[in-house]
Image 1 (cartoon, rainbow, N blue to C red):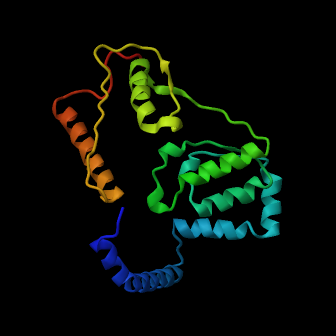
Image 2 (image 1 turned 90 degrees about the vertical axis):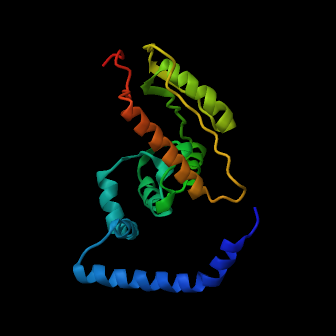
Length: 218
């Protein structure tokens, strides 16, 4: 990777962007206070601040003994801090898959899941692998395993299908390889991928093809 014209432009306007951001944030904060409303981020920060109060912690310590956090790969640093405060007085279980992290646009970090998992294991916790798929039949799961074993390497965790039903025809699995110029922003690649998937779904609907095997049980 190397710096290009876009990086030079960003360096030139970074100060103005920072100033604009601060002004907008200040104006938004003033508007929310006048209206007496909060947004989702405010709720998270308020919860974290509340958990610094000994009386609040004592209240929830009496109420809760166990903490279960699902989709931890989509946890932001603020949410992680909240979880840590509660986990300090609860038996804690976290569920997640770092490979499925999709909320980076709002500050979520997959490494939070890895970090919390390692700490729980170091403290005597147990790792339980949830590798059984209840959504997909066996032949499709096998194809998925074949594809992602190469794509993910050591991070691949093979699945086992609970549904042993064998549908007619080949599993409807397609794999595409994107060839993009070096330095292409990840967001551009993801947008192209999203358009390709959407086009495929629209084509199936236009052809009257079902998204589910009509002979499958249930």
